[in-house]
Amino acid sequence: IAGARVRYGFARENRHIGPSPPVERLFEPVETGADGHFEIPRLPPGQYTLEIAADGFAPKAKSAEVSEDKTADLECDLAKAARIFGRIVGPDGKPRVRAMVRVSLCEVGTSRFAESDADGRYEVGDLAAAKYLVWYSDSEGEALRSEGMADARRVTLGEGESLEVDFPSAKGMHLSGVVRCGKRALADADVLV
Image (tube, rainbow, N blue to C red; front, top):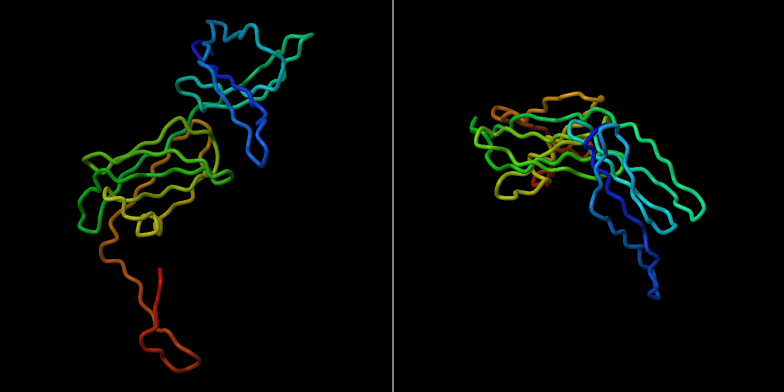
């Protein structure tokens, strides 16, 4: 893929006493040529992480080991990017403006965010084919635990797929019930949703 961006970094060992995770440092990306080839010269030996991204394709991470006596040769197949888009409408039937939409990868929990526009529309692109959890919070930062989280959607995206995930008005919807202990109804019980 011509014009793909390849960022690379390596993990450094922390020399401080006590538990501490290694720090990863990413360097400026190099770009692939017309034939999709890239080269990163003069790398010291070690284990590297590469992040490969190209417009219209889902980003991908790969590992490579560089040693003093040989050149590391790496091939990477990118998949067409997927996207999630939709519209958020409040109970009053009006669009939710500036609602924060969160799209989280189910397996590892990493997230991407988008803000809804004046029509309540949002879009999150450059996604890999995977399972995601999609939810929102309102413009005042009303907790994700409120109606947006309660309305969370689990979705599965295929390669290159565009999936519409709307959050329609909850107008007219309700939940009711009776709290009992055996056959006796309990007054003043707390019901949390």
